[in-house]
Length: 257
Image (cartoon, rainbow, N blue to C red; front, side, top):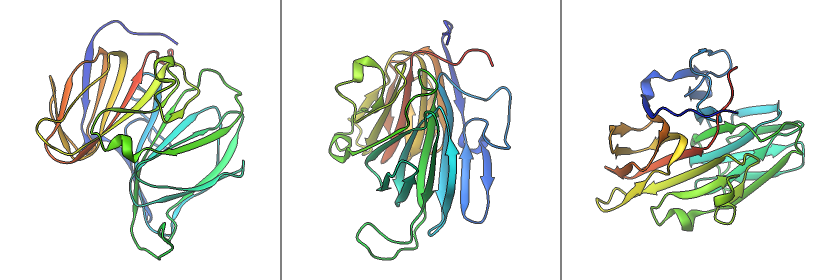
């Protein structure tokens, strides 16, 4: 791992993302993913994947493998059914933090089940963002964790959701095996006095998952826009309307590949 010393702000607009579209999936990739490869866009800091996915009801990702990756899934609308080879099974919905550590190897599936949480049938898509960060070391024991944090999000503050950074160890909802990274979420109402401040870090990735915000020094960011910052932080972010902002704070990056 290595760090950079030159301050830099790089804005990536929603419409410029790589896309995968099939009958049941609309996926937009912030970084190289699958058949979409750009050698100049493989990661930022420790973040390798930031996929913005919409999956049709009754459809989803069949059982497939992962290895040596910390995978955080954040649902924006609808519900997603998770099942894995460790025997974990659950429904992920807005306000539920979820992390899967692939470690030495794990199989899992993710489906938009045709049933609501209350047992009634539905025909709604599920919208979620899936993010992958690199663990501290390969060959860890696979694991899974989830926790509901709706009450914390209702404050409108920037909430530490998943972290390995020691400073958040007692404040975060779930843990990840990456001691240089933390994932934060702000669910903002759009009230003019509601402001969040970005943490100072060598690497930040700010993603507007829903809504529209104004970021100090950048300007207006619409849904799907992202900002990659190096040696920066402290910028104030305000929401122009109800919005959800996802922030990765990282204190290391992948070495040259």
